[in-house]
Length: 72
Image (cartoon, rainbow, N blue to C red; front, top):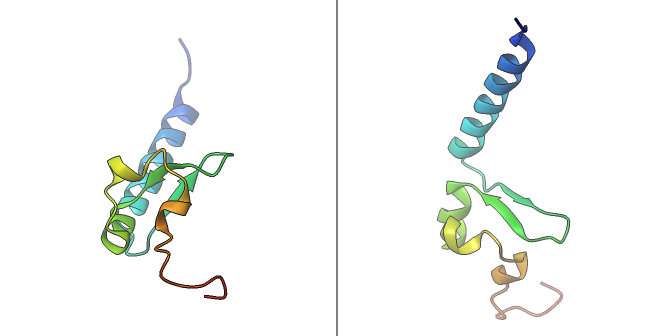
């Protein structure tokens, strides 16, 4: 027999954090070391117009509209 109490606690904590990210009113993005999106939450979808399936794997440069100058 093995005691899996710590593993279960870690899994529960991860589930709570995942629900918090999904329900947050603020946009949350997670990138890999290259800067490509690996996760975007529903609030990101609402404010950016990009669906998760479209954004994941892309670089944040997709958010540049080209409408503002560099000072903006």
